[in-house]
Every structure is written in C-alpha cells, then in structure tokens.
Length: 181
Image 1 (spheres, rainbow, N blue to C red):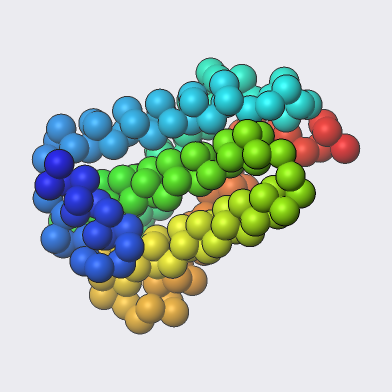
Image 2 (image 1 turned 30 degrees about the vertical axis):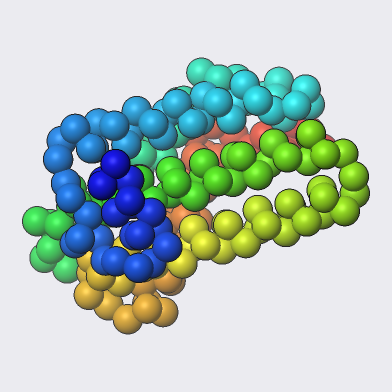
C-alpha cells in the first residue's frame, strides 16, 4: 500500500521519481496492470465502429508495443545523457504514473454512459482533456528529475515521446479513425 501511495504522490507531482521504491515485482505488476487496463478499456467500449476495430487482443498488443517503445525511447535518452543507471526506476515511474492517470480517465469515461445528459457529457469530456494535459505534465516531471533538465525542456521531451509513440503505433496498427470516416 505504501508503494501505491508513493505512486500517487509522484503522479500528483509531490515527489520525484527517485523517491519511488523499485523492485522487479513492482515492474512486473506495473506491466501486468497496464495490459489489464488496456483489455478493460477495449471490452468496455460502446458498440461503435471503433469497437469493431479495437479488439481486446489488439488493445493488449498496442499497449505492449507502447511499453516497448517507452523502454527504447527512455533508454536512448538516458544513454545520450549518460544516466542509464536510472532506467528501471524511471521506466517504473512512468508506467505506474500513467497507469494511475489512465485508470482515472477510464473511470471518468464510463460516467457519461450512466448519466446521459449533454451537460455531464461535456463536463466529463473537459475533465478527460484535463487528465490528458496532466499526463503531459507528469511525464515532463519524470523527465525533469530523471534527466536533470529544465521543466520546459522536460515537458517538450515528454510531448515528443507521446507524439512519436502515437506515430509509431499508427504505423504498426493503422489509424482507427480512417476506417470510421
């Protein structure tokens, strides 16, 4: 429980990634929970054309590729800055923190299907956009302390990672919105 408390503190920018305890069990747990959340998101999608494109197995494959790309990107950046000894702790920090934010996002995305009013749909859409911005700031926070760079440079690296990750994912799996339009 102390570990999850530390993850929450990291995700809310109260502590730096160095304060997060690291063990191999935590890393395996983080990867497994990320894959499980991807599966849950895929099976909970409303019946739309996007759901027919995103099967639960494809969601797990996409998350696996994203985790692999994160590991590759993070190792490359750390290698360039001669800080590879921080790899496992930063990888754990990013996967657990993004898991926490994605879990909140997932729970919020279920609310408009329960409360079916335009106001709540708009409100929760706005909150989801805020959590996406939170994701950028969080990843920048981890890069800031892990790479020992300025806040703006770290957020830029984080945005670069997210954009490149999206492009790599679309190159491998295609763009689901092309089929919908």
